[in-house]
Length: 239
Image 1 (cartoon, one colour):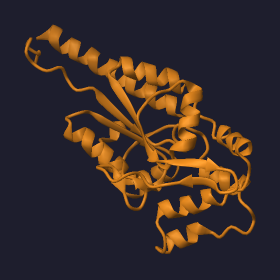
Image 2: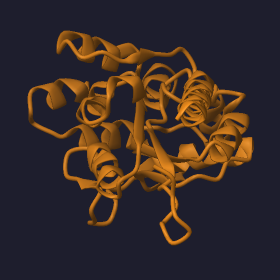
Image 3: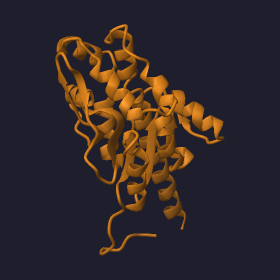
Image 4: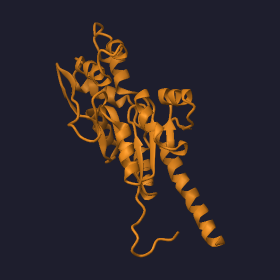
């Protein structure tokens, strides 16, 4: 159906993307545990798996245990290896009618460092924080709001739901177990997964699009739009 002059243009599509392990090769918390923490730091993941603390509280405790100086911590941030083609991917998606939103259960402090270095400016929903030498990376929960989660800090599924409520086509990309609820909400052609998320989806019998780096997702969505446009043009020419 063709749009009349008074009809509203179609809503822009939305890619909701995890950050650690999705836009980057490595997770900050894993690099932190391996390289930045004293040997006597407790295993907070044991407490998390036992239900004694939340996922947010476990990350918060690990980050607060960092005793390295800021230059050392920033060097670890660089070792996360942000996809070098991310800026190009965001630009191509924008031209193709896609907005990109980052959702993360990690800390906005290191996310914004890497995005600024890459020249990427997109909305980020993540736990706020600041680095203080001698006190570590002090991660705080976000302010209460529609995307707040008491266990993760950020409710990624709520971001996806809002996009769907706004009648937008929504894609999701992630790599971890906390991404599962959000990934379930989108169709398999728009569900991108690797690592733990791929394993969880496979266990539930849900299909997804595998990826190894984030720029592959951007390219796939742009290719999808070109294919759909070509099909629409063929239908119009034959009618």
